[in-house]
Each structure stands twice: as C-alpha cells, then as structure tokens.
Picture 1 (cartoon, rainbow, N blue to C red):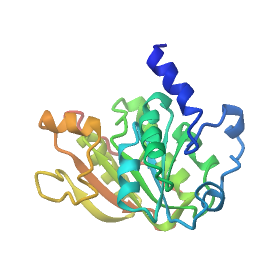
Picture 2 (tube, rainbow, N blue to C red):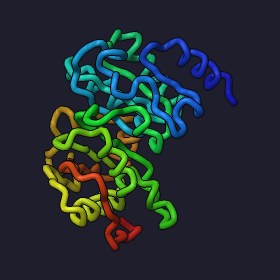
Picture 3 (cartoon, rainbow, N blue to C red):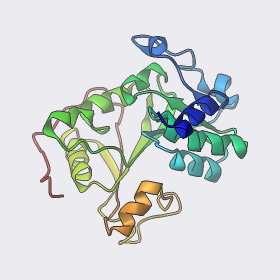
Picture 4 (cartoon, rainbow, N blue to C red):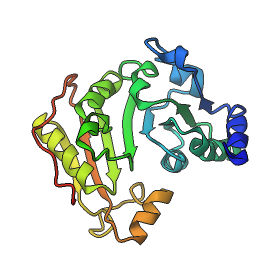
Length: 238
C-alpha cells in the first residue's frame, strides 16, 4: 500500500464528519446512528440526502455548499477516495456534511424508516456482466433496501455516463410502475442540466472530454417495498 494512501487512512481517523464502523458493528446488526442522524450527528432537524457510491465526495460537498439547511451523507467503501470529500468538509467547516465508509449492501444498517429524504447515485459501476446485474445500485434488490429508509415521496436521482445502466434502470422503473419525474439521455447536449446537475465529478469531466453523453433519471418508489426485475437487458453497445 502506498504511503499517500496510508497517510489518508490515518487522517480519516481524525475527521469528525467521517463514520468508519468495523465490519462486526454492522453485520446483521444496526449501527448506533440508525434513526438518530439528525439529533446525534448533525444536531439539527435537517432533511437528509444520501449520495451512494460517492467516490471522492464531489457531489456530497457541492450539494452541501448549495443547500446549507439539508444534511448530506456520502457513502462509499473506498476510504482513500472519500478522504478528499471529508477533508474538504472539515477544512470548510461544513457542518451539514457527513460520510460513511461501508458497502452499499449494508446501507439499511445505518438508516431507519423514513430517515432519508432523497438519494443521489452518481456514476456507479454499471456492472455490465450478466452475472453482476444484481450488483447494480438500481437493481430491485437495492431498491428494496432503499425503501426501508427512504420516505415514500423521496426522489432517487441516477446520473451516469452508462447508457446501458440508464436503459436498464428505465426498464426497472417501468416494470415496477414507479413514478418518473425526469429522464434525459444527454443533460448537457439538450440543455437539461440545471445548477445541481451541472456539478461535475472528476470522472464526469473525463467522460465529457471523450464525448460521452451524461444521462439522468429522477424517480421515486411510491411507498412500495418489493421490486421485481424486468426480462430486459440493454444492448451492451449502448
């Protein structure tokens, strides 16, 4: 392991905004913050928005700057990447920003019923192999997890360079009769991107330089708890 990565891991231990539970703290059990993020972590009655697979935390930090009356929590397993967002939030004293280092598979160990108001999923691994479909962050198995803590009226946002994942998620939405507020195949080419959608991650900037369109979906679960997979798989050339 490189010296820079080890240095970041050590510095992560000093950040009050970063929660890093041990595996045994969350495996088949609830984290102490579950159901108590507002009063215990933020110490404010914020609406709570999650960024799942936050990487360096660019979206978490940018949204936190834009909306100081909302609590933003970035979730990812990559501690060396998350260091950047946690360090920025600490240096700028952004009290409405937090980070959780964990696998998304354990996300419902951290949040209680109706605790989250909104979810952002920004440039996740599209998991293109057929054997990995269930690993997609918009697969029915993950939607069922989100339904345990996302308010019924809460929106889920998917921003991705993967047309394959975009079309797959549209099929999941249609098959489960979910409400869609927005669906765009090219947010910059069509002028659809507003101030929030125009926040660019490092990866997104690279995709745009290569001429890859950025897609966007906004939908909600409508209080449903169980979701089903469509008999559909997009062309891998998308």
